[in-house]
Length: 138
Image (cartoon, rainbow, N blue to C red; front, side, top):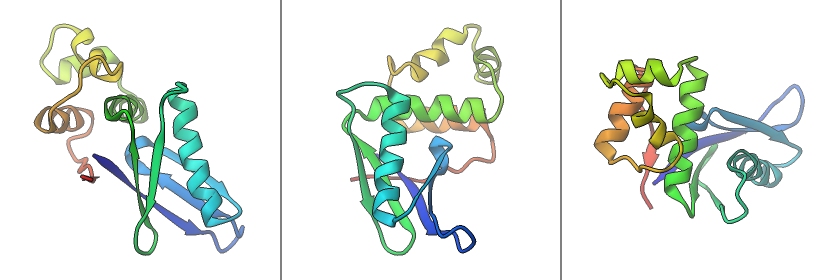
């Protein structure tokens, strides 16, 4: 699975801005090529593991996709970043998922459990019922 992002040149500053909304990550660079490198580096720094590799694939126009050699770790980062972006605690997530234990959800954020597509959709809807994740295969 891959996450979709976008890159564009800011007319006022002249910098290239790049973001991956599902990961709640945005950075900037002086060139489009550097922007791709910067977003990959930002993700690697957040993961903090030397064996974690990010793959950035430019698409047509301002789109690109992000993938990784460890999909479970990337999904874990996405769940944590989305939960934090929506100011939710692990306990609040447990309540939204009708679970008595926050540990069940925390296992997904820690990468110890990898959700199925159906479970991932359920987790994302618990974070934000209006969220429509854009994931790409391949």
